[in-house]
Length: 393
Ligand SMILES: *Cc1c(COP(=O)(O)O)cnc(C)c1O
Image 1 (cartoon, helix red, strand yellow):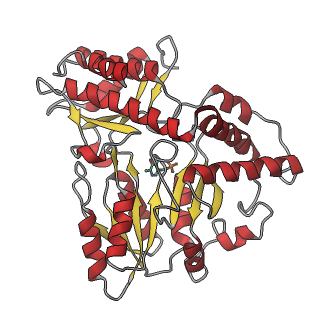
Image 2 (cartoon, protein in one colour):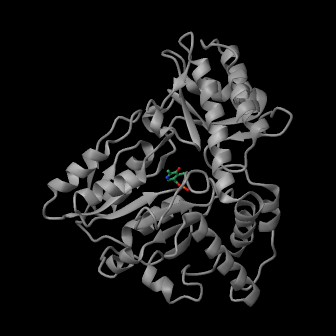
Image 3 (cartoon, helix red, strand yellow):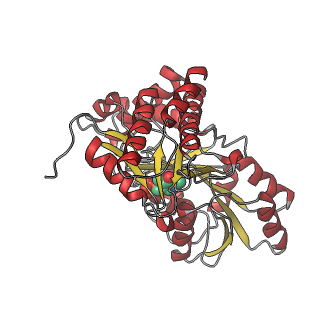
């Protein structure tokens, strides 16, 4: 056993996220038959609740598996060997989704982008306009790139597809945006949305899902990639119209409580505005620190700041892992690390899910403390900038 500091763990990772006690307690439920009438009623309320978060009246399928499972489901249900997809580069997560597609036998074309600025929708439109034979079957967009702290405008991507007059489906990864950042499946013309349990929905890891448009269900019928556990057609023959195999009932007791917290206790609009407020407080703090050659916001595109995660770029010559190590080992504050090529260059503050002002201010104060301990240049008093913002917000 390593020696742990006293006091509660301040968990500021961008996924998994803090699990409210009421969800933990709800999930500690005894086993039930998943065909039990009361359970099926609860299950159906969960389906309705998740559809309200997705803002869709179309189709929804669940999987026992993390977000990667839903990624795979989105690909194998809609595509065939040799099909081409267009991936919009955002960072680590667009690259991972693309690598998975390539491993499944899908040809991957990428709209390249600077990770600090993000892709230009005009480049998406140009790539689609150049595809006169319509060989591109789907455009894959990560709504919120968790590795860089940048949000992509999905309506702008929808508009680019429409302006090119291209029939490709629009697939969106909403894993770190759902329940944190505005997302509108039906209104924005999304064909498949990939979601997971352990970020804005405040649940443990291991449940994921896809929202699917009626148009995508038609395309699904002719898709030829091998599929078994993820097969939507097979799922529709099952009593819950989802899940091949045992339904993970515990998750649904937790999900029912998550939906109560989001829709009934706080309200989705207020959930989203809380995320914006806390995110803006973090950004004001980091912008203050950036003086004296201090750390900076990794995302330089002010229109695309993420309201669920902030990546902080260290000054040249300083390692982000040192800050993370000090914060965790001395103060029990867990921060996210830099993913793939950003490892060591950035640390990430997750501000999504079950989070309030004291948690975010505590985290920011400890980051500033860790910077002072490690001799990282910065302008002291970032927390005051966050307080000044929150006082007026
Ligand atoms: C967390 C995350 C994933 C991966 O989900 P897992 O549950 O870890 O499989 C995919 N995409 C984004 C944007 C994420 O934030």
